[in-house]
Length: 176
Image 1: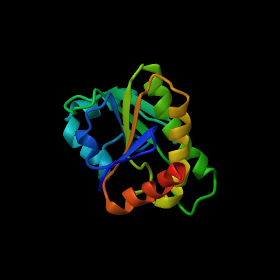
Image 2: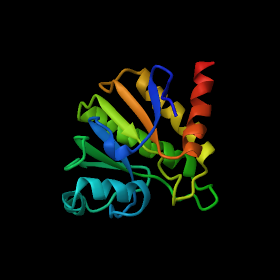
Image 3: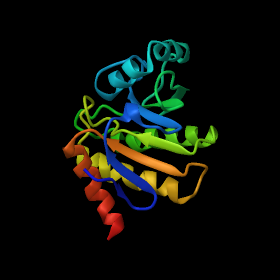
């Protein structure tokens, strides 16, 4: 599908591991161990050094993020953001989802990074409803981008048509 941009965020469908940006944001687990989905793809593409670096960090609480080098990825860094497991919602799940995106942006800003690409955190194996996530995440990313931090390029990279359309629907609201 064609890229969609509101001037602050660019939505693209593709492979996060091929993004040529300063940092990509991984949907990590609290233990910072390679898993399935995008996390597994990032671990495979980055090489075994990534897990060694993550083992040195140890863990990351839900709603927060940690950074490592990108190793064999085209991106210089990987920011590992831990989103919530849905389990029916409640218990601050919405706030935790937004928090992990904001934590990733704060890290990128602290490292003076200019470009960052996100995946749809928590909407795969963690079961967070896709449309609900898009309605929370796009405004949070846009709010950060509008403030004109060091980051000049914010990309949401989706893999599936369903994910692209969910985020595109929310972004189109900003274009209207």
